[in-house]
Image (tube, rainbow, N blue to C red):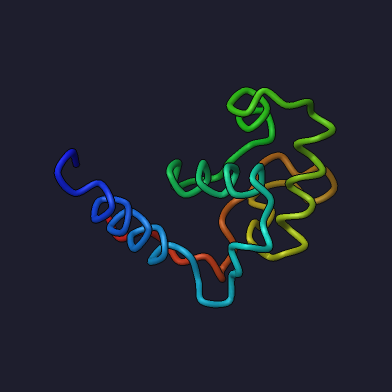
Length: 99
């Protein structure tokens, strides 16, 4: 890393690029949306608004708005609940990381 920091950065970007679908335009996401997406990818399973609230230190109202935006963009989809959605998972257009 010390000897080739730019190369390290490129490798990380390539790995993240593999996780995201071709249809997903990363520039259309806000910083907070990108952080929620990163958290969902790292977790690898359903994500609750409470987890995002704690992780990003945001209000529940703000987190609900972010989740709503990500659902509209088809990045996240409801994982549980019908009237009251309790958890969300990555949408089909977001590629799953290779395990």
